[in-house]
Image 1 (cartoon, rainbow, N blue to C red):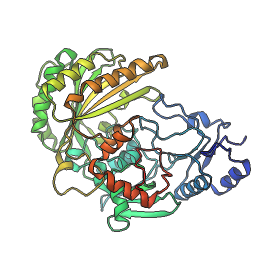
Image 2 (cartoon, rainbow, N blue to C red; image 1 turned 180 degrees about the vertical axis):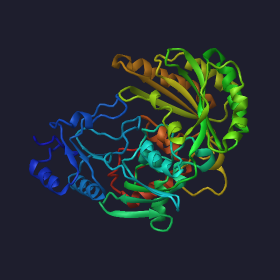
Image 3 (tube, helix red, strand yellow; image 1 turned 135 degrees about the vertical axis):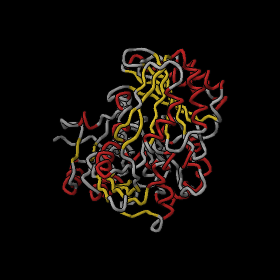
Image 4 (cartoon, rainbow, N blue to C red; image 1 turned 90 degrees about the vertical axis):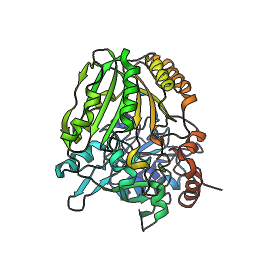
Length: 462
């Protein structure tokens, strides 16, 4: 193998003997630009991201993470950390630096009696669901099975079960962490509790989490699926969705979206997941299923992993993506009209505008004290451009920006951390809200040199 083109942040190339010594200590796979596996290893879900790391260290376990951090820190290397590689902004990669790749660490271990699940940081939601479902359990996490559990958890984590059981970070019991100094520590409610607070919603600022321990819940079969209406009914459907969710029980998670059907027909969809008694769910969902003239009603009982993968085809590998989002003060008639107007201007049939409704357990008194800052938000609107032709980059990005700008009169303060694309430091500060100062102090304690900076970064307090 030829020496990897690995550079220090000052520009100097790391010499071959240093890399060879690293290889002797490393038990996973080191992948450089001249390796046959390099092109596949540097690709992530969003094809808009095209970065060329100097070296990819695919770890086999926690000891490999420590070796990689120690190697990088001693040589002042730029470091990116890859879990599932599903972050839209491409923070899993960097140019010329070292990618600490956790994607081979996929172990999921279930304690059925205690309802506790130990998960390695490279696992996806699908990996977790596959194991927990055997025991009739589920960890509240996301809506797309290919999403990495690590990034989702560290950013808070909202999904189908958030209204009933809270965000993913509220169900986190402990973490095994490798710090910026290359030390292994445990973080939970009693050991390093301040670090544990920051890991639950504070992003990847404080270390590399090698494994997570979660509380699971008895969820096996859900009543879920999609109802699609003609696009011309969009305004009426979204108003009905708003009124319906205002009194919906916590067992119901439901999003609304302006999408295009597989046969090319613009549509308005409601995607629902009921995690309680099925007969009761049938009753609760009757007002939605009986509304208007749907093109399709695919609501049915299904295993929770099937629900979790229902939207996977809408986010295929290898497409180009550019996302923005905005919390709304309320889903007003004016905001709905703006969403419909810009949804009708979408340039690609793969693009969508999604309205996510939260509420429920996340914002109630008695929730855990965590760095997740957006508990009181109800409606989040995601404008998700997705296309395939690089020549269409500028037009699709402009569509996304225009839609979000048009919604600015109706937005409330804050951002959902896991939805941030290329926004700057002001947006990150707003995403963390009142927690920002506390996070900056925590960063100064655990990463005073900002070694972990390729994230939704909180610089250390001076």
